[in-house]
Length: 85
Image (cartoon, rainbow, N blue to C red; front, side, top):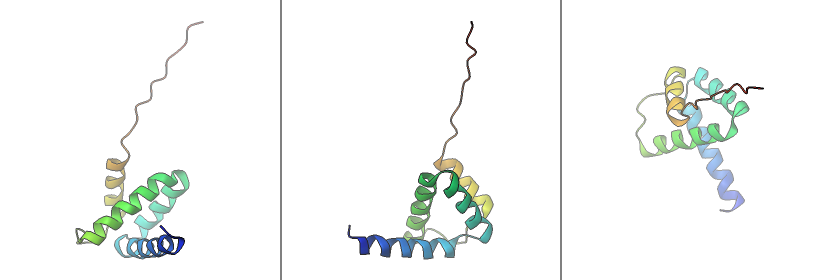
């Protein structure tokens, strides 16, 4: 892809995200981006694909965005073992 194509895609994606997310959901997306930019990018692409395919019939609020994030980022179980000395 050319730089111009990438810039155009980013502009289209950003515009679509603003249309489909509520203010609270946009703020959450911003916080996710700070903590984990990869997950935020995956989420944006997923939402953009839904938007482009016409599968979104309503705006996504913060609660729905959290549900989507839970699906996209399954929780990892962490085990802490105590080492005997």
